Structures are given as C-alpha cells and as structure tokens.
Amino acid sequence: MALILNIETATSVCSVALSRDELILSSKESNEQNSHSSLITIFIEQILKESETKIENLDAVAISKGPGSYTGLRIGVSTAKGLCYALDKPLISIGTLQSMAFGLLKYPEIQELKQNILFCPMIDARRMEVYAAIYDTSNVEVREVRAEIIDKNSFNEYLQNSKVVFFGDGASKFKEVLSGHPNAIFIDNVLASSLNMAELAEQKYCNNQFEDLAYFEPFYLKDFIAGKPKVKGLH
Image 1 (cartoon, rainbow, N blue to C red):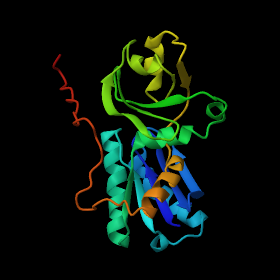
Image 2 (cartoon, one colour):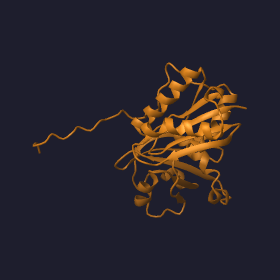
Image 3 (cartoon, rainbow, N blue to C red):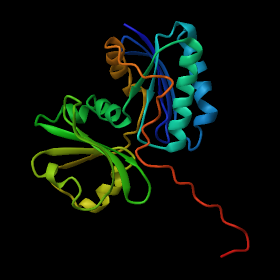
C-alpha cells in the first residue's frame, strides 16, 4: 500500500508515472530524442499536480536501473536519488528488461497465446548489438541480461523448444537476420515505460527491497565509450 513515483529513462523514452497500490494515477512520457534532462522534472511536476499529490507524501521513488543509454540512466538515477535524499524516502530499482517483459504480459495478442512461451526484450545497443534477457510467463528470468551481437543463430537453443516473443527497440535487428523462424514472434512498437514499473515497484516496497542511496549505480552493463570529435581540416 504505497504511493510511488516511477521513473524510466533507460532508453530514448522519458517516462514518469505516479502509482498507488499498483494503480496508475497519472503519467507522462515522450519519445523525443535527447529530451530526458529537459523533460523529467517537468513531467514529475505535472503528474503530481494532475493527481493533486504533494511530493512529500510519496512513500518511495522507483527507478528503471538499466541496461540502456548511459546518459539516460545517469539522468534518471540522479533525479531519483536527489528526490530520495531531499524527501528522506527509499529508492527502489527495477530492471529495465524485466519491466518491459512484465508489461508485455498484458498485451491482448500475448494473452491469446495458450501455449508456454518465453519473452525476450531487446534494447538497441548500436550496430548489431543489443541488451537482452529471457523471461517466462511468470516474469522469472530464464537467461540473464547480456550485451550480445545478433546473428541468425542467436537464441537458437530457446527457439528449438518453445515460442519466443521478441520486442523492444532492438528486436528489428534480429528480425532482419532470423529469416522467419516458425517459433519466433515479433511485436513492434514495444518501448520501455514507467507504466510497466508500478506493480514490480509495489512488490519490492512491500518486501522492503530498497537500494543503498550512497552506493547505488545504474546497471550500465558496458563501459561508456565517448566518440572522438572530428577536427576540422583533418581527414
């Protein structure tokens, strides 16, 4: 029974939702590129105003911890930790891929599938690489989160034995190289969202599964590599 502010900035989506007892009271999100820093505090103010909620009445702040965009994760985690320090509230972290898989369970096309299936959320990690994991219908992790280069043989051991649903902004890469495997199901336009975090955050709140504010860091999975700026006149 908690009032939780949920923040998702691990991908191109900037998404914030306010939930009480797993139910969404208000939410705002945008898929505009590089907008996290300019939108996140505005979204928080807007959903608190719309729901007539004072920020000091929050019970906790939940953050999507990654993997994903280095910059997006830092912005989201810094905002969440700042709020928790200022309000003296606990911080809850939710795995981004787990949250995406949990949200997909509610899709009508998934509920129509009667057989046992697996879920493979994918986040674009540039070139032919993705961040991916596999979950079952109970949202239990079957294969751990990895950064991997996609080819036609990826996930073959799972596709041999069951239907696997691929989704997320990295799934189109796999769809291009897989060549129509009969057990592969692709669902388009599934993005990370704070709307998928509410129930998972409530469960962690009830179980007192909080992060240490002083030491918590995003789950980057890979080291950040900055591109070198081009110098004019040099080729």
